[in-house]
Image 1 (cartoon, rainbow, N blue to C red):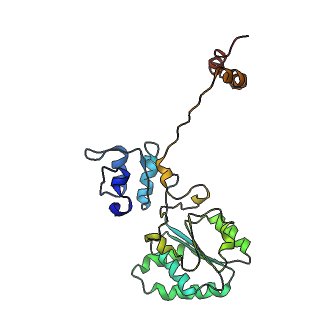
Image 2: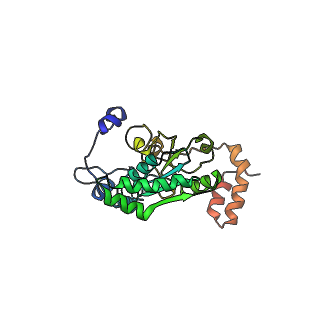
Image 3: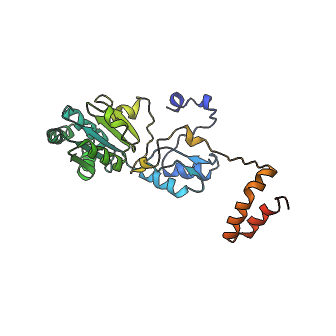
Length: 264
């Protein structure tokens, strides 16, 4: 898998370890006889991996969010196919008993038919027990009265995956501020993004889409600030620094600037 998608040679990757779980997090965070420690750990995992990443954070860096149980929010309308919607919800629910599956629609008919379809389709999947518990504990079907309510709810949930399974999905796009990824239209389904649609699949969960994004190359960049001041520059800006430093009782700060300013 790494060979085809990461292309190690192009990325100049020299070491690949086939390891996983909390023990792998410990190994790369602190190093072993065979594994070198790293500076940053990124990527998804189960709840034990997520807990391990929280433990080692500070000793190493981690991405801007710790991925939790997977989640999907689907927005449907009277044109949506309840058979398809139900299968999308079940597809999410079979991930994990803690997975979150939500349908939001103004159409009461869609909600009723989708609920019936879920009962039918659940019986036909191998991970029935997991999906059923997920839907029972974390599945929600929400009927609303307006598009504004839909937008407000979506932005509050900040879902990992959002499916806009509606005819006029373009009218929603600019108003949705919080989501990990957005599937547009009835054929753009979350299961496609799981495997080969091309978008990033390591996405913020548990509402963290309000302040973070999916993993990108930015996770592997860091920034250094460079500051250069001329003699004239410090003489111009220095007095305000001296004032603030003295106000805070940091006389050493004030003196380090004061000593560089031309005496009059």
